[in-house]
Length: 188
Image (cartoon, rainbow, N blue to C red):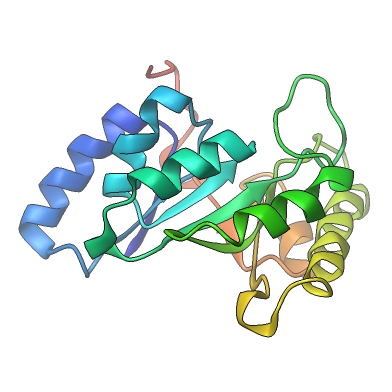
């Protein structure tokens, strides 16, 4: 394994430090996939290769400002609230193009794609609906971006719906529960 996703900043930083000292920075790729608070952006910008959960312009701006130049651009995905759930953060589908155009201009970021965590659905066919919508949204956004900035990533699908996500074009699935089991406690 060379790509690791982490939800919790402090827990991740300890793992990154340990494994980087043993294997080197270029060997492993760290993906931050959890909610990102403004006060944690510097640590994420300095330690991760990817952020999948950019849910507002302010977070993107802070990541760009705080990314060390020697690390190169930070790969990011816009988190899309594809089902417009009040309990979830992220850009709405209607806000996504404007956000992508603004964020694609930030110097120390490379906007790679979109990420979503749709509502849980009981069947694969119903799961495909939201994933198809995210795939179509990426294609719509790409029509407005320069060729060098086209989005190539769809971060969608987790342990309970990865088959539906893959069938709709997912390029990154986030599989934790099926590998490690369900977490009992939330780490701050």
